Image (tube, rainbow, N blue to C red):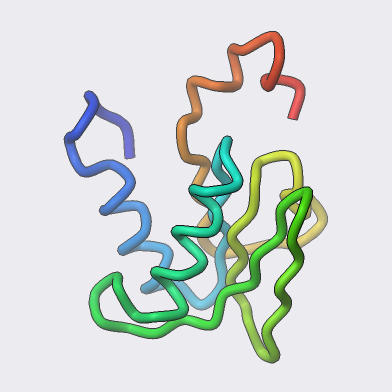
Length: 101
């Protein structure tokens, strides 16, 4: 999903993530990863609870039978194939400080 600020890109991407059999969310900030982890686990997206791991540089919460993962972009498991991958704040890839991830 691409579009201007406040156009619902993240909402629609998370909705698609919840609908998938497996997926990952990756964001530039630890707090964004936490927020998505909590939303999926609590069913705050479309009312569907989805077991979701959380992996950041500081935390690792691995849930039994989770097929979804929320993480900071640096912690994405590139060897794990998923049905849906959400890269939030993709424009950060152009950053000299964060783009390498």
